[in-house]
Length: 373
Image (cartoon, rainbow, N blue to C red; front, side, top):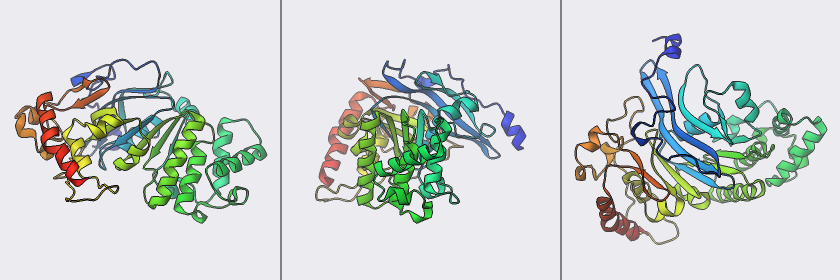
């Protein structure tokens, strides 16, 4: 299949109004939701088949709140963030569903509209600040450029603002370092500079994609404290994308657990950590080391590997790795589980009934976590 054929290829997926299998089953967005995503599907046609990177994702986020999106590599976390920011090549992606940002629909919106919102109403801290920042321009030049795109000010005013932002994020001697290039910054300082650039226009939504990757633990803690402090100052809605549950434990109000491009559990952070309901979430918690208490047992890894997003297993995509699929039987391998509410503000996509989940949690999962902790 040529690139031109892939561009026009019709994908066998529902449009944004189709609520197939309860994938958009959160219902209407709450009144305080600044960002509302419903049944988001992001598919990439390739010569080998359709890559279903995001395949039915729904969540809400209010101003001043933080959502943690967690999952293994390849679960669709970063694709989700790039979809919100409008950074996918429209010639190589097919998107369905709805992304409402402050009441503005982003799916299907013009490039000019999304570009006018990017940086001003929504901004992103990228995973690798060294590659995200242009090596030929100084850090200050790039912050100044981002600020002047959305503000009719002189270079002198924008430069002063860039220095103020660098100072605000903890860069020492900001009036001098503003003229340094990215390679002259340490990893932690580049991440701070990226945060300064992202917040230069006081965005309403801040997306942080793996903001602490490749940083030592001391700098990680500083970056997380910085994001928390700046959120309080700007009242931004924040999305933290990570595979590290320790990071979301520090920041998140709600947690969305993703697997194979789909949401498998979505609830308040306290519920996800204290009473998780999905076998994949149990696996993530079981494989997370505890540093605050003495460890007496080995970690419990999730067997197998994540599936190919071109050939996602039928039924529940997690069933080949799930230790509890025999309790349900054939539905796990043949029927896609409905993303449903099992308690107020607690949704899961799993065929296990409430009795089985509670029995497994109380008799197997919770004791094993307690033994390790």
